[in-house]
Length: 356
Ligand SMILES: *Cc1c(COP(=O)(O)O)cnc(C)c1O
Image (cartoon, rainbow, N blue to C red; front, side, top):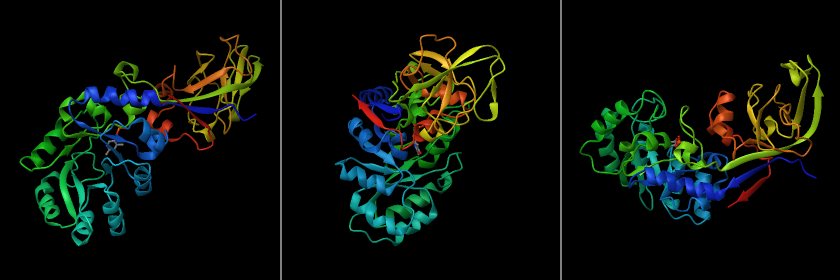
């Protein structure tokens, strides 16, 4: 028999989350963000379950080509645009929409001769200081783009640095609106957090990612309360049980010492499956549907769960690492990270099953 670990994908929840996001996004069209293999959920699976989206957004040309091969004819937004002039013929051939965030990209477009023009969204840096032109350069850059024969429609984009945090969107939104005032073209600003918290930002197109996968973009608000259902459940089983005497230590480095007699279960899941190695003792985990905590260091293929309060649990008991019944957000918070990272890190060796 194979190792009992598996990732279970609820594609009905994926479609349901899209509908829930749409209900919050006014009339905005939605680019379902499917970068990083659809946040670990599988690109083809996500494209199928999210067929009601108005388009898809990602980063890799290979993944965009795969979407076209899968029969996707809707707009595909390339979130970092093209990386070299040699990419542009592919953008034209595949009908991709490019984010343009740099002078270098504008120059590449000015020099390009393409069989058909590429639609672009000019990205403005409104405070993230990652990608994008300074807002005051928007008008001039827009003129250059409009004059380039390789360029089709020109729209405008920004990305919020703190839509999920205390700074909010007021300042960057004002900068974006000032820079683009009076310029014709579509607008796209909002990620999941902005859609859910700042409906005034949804504009023509919104770009939900994490909410589609049933996780919360907020540290202080749970996915369930936002009407979102988990899509990925990482499940496994107990493969051994042992009794600990007070003072016994557990795992590499012996970082956990039993304060009293305890019963623990060894779970077939480790960091090589994508479980975070930094999850400390006490990270929430479900055994037979009951919430308990991990014990000791996570190793490559195994981790340990406290079964002291679950006397019925034994070898073969079902374990949920995250997903249905235990939000990925809670596990991520305990491990000092965000659900995004856990979902994306699901390892290729974990068998995948689908449930509609
Ligand atoms: C990843 C990404 C998104 C989606 O963000 P979520 O927080 O997952 O909703 C939107 N826009 C851009 C530019 C992104 O890179």
